[in-house]
Image (cartoon, rainbow, N blue to C red; front, side, top):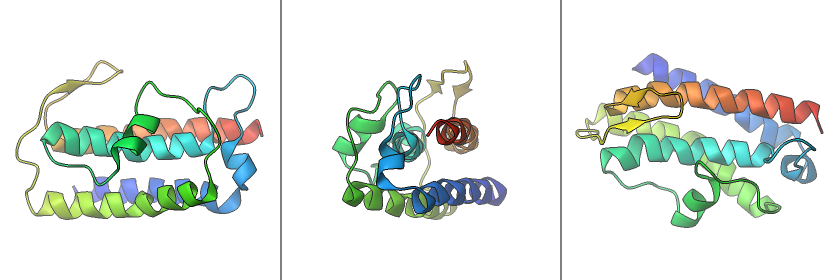
Length: 151
């Protein structure tokens, strides 16, 4: 599983680079033809990881209910995000992955509620959720690359 955690951290470093190298305006811009922006996609990856790995394992999320409701599956950009909110999102990029690794190594993920994802695959345990989450984050990295070209 160390490999899966390393992939997750590498992807999060790529996401952090978007925050570091784009203005507040660019992070918030929803280009024509898109329903979300760069910062929504980044926050969505954090929320999805917490829901797929923690919630379905019956464990609490470190995120606020408000953040989960704002960025969960089925949501879209509703307005601009402040610099303070972007800083909070950036802070969760690495801490959530490191905590997941620690919790996994401490065998906290003992139960899991099966969940069928949009690709039709059914997740049956936290390990599968961690692997699928890496795939999911890769999809959103692709969206962000397309958004960046449209800025």
